[in-house]
Length: 122
Figure 1: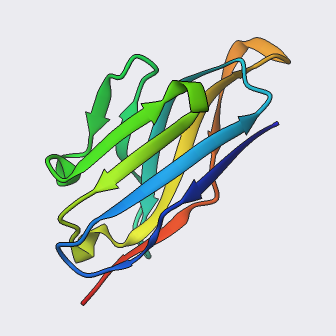
Figure 2: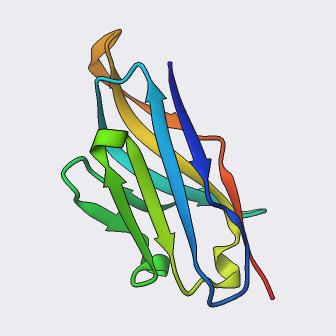
């Protein structure tokens, strides 16, 4: 089993910043891509940003220039620095990790965290 634990959400005013963290633990041989999705009330879940083990990133257009993803491969942890937050960024943010476990070494499985709430409001 693999567990993803997110932290760092909260309430912030427009223009403010937050830093999310997500630590993966459990039976992990390797983590390929890690990422952040978000889901706002009444909206579909959307990809915010992803990062490969080599550091290649893909950002949603709506967050380019404001959000920065990074990861610490030694700690199996991914971070999301969110600056200049807007009310439209309000959502539950979910971490993902594409994991290879020792039980199925030829299969990559996507695991999801439970999510952390981000609310941007004055």
